[in-house]
Length: 111
Image (spheres, rainbow, N blue to C red):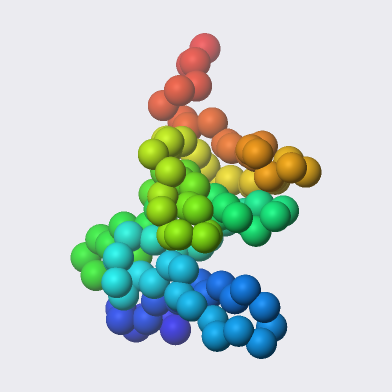
């Protein structure tokens, strides 16, 4: 909903088709998360996502990539900083992921 500062998408998970969905990421509660550039592991246990912060009442995506444990909602302590135009691909065993990122302009050597 463009222009509505109070609108935030909620990411839900379900154990089965018949079970009740539960909110995994609810920006109304934590205010710092959303799901552009996210990737769910093949076994469904983890989700990699970029942080979102609120600036002047509007959500803004940061360059920080985090990983959440879907089972208990905990966020792993490791953070990949300043990733841009992100693409995520989990390995077959869901032990880790590969990512492609555009290089930050400040890190490029100028000739």
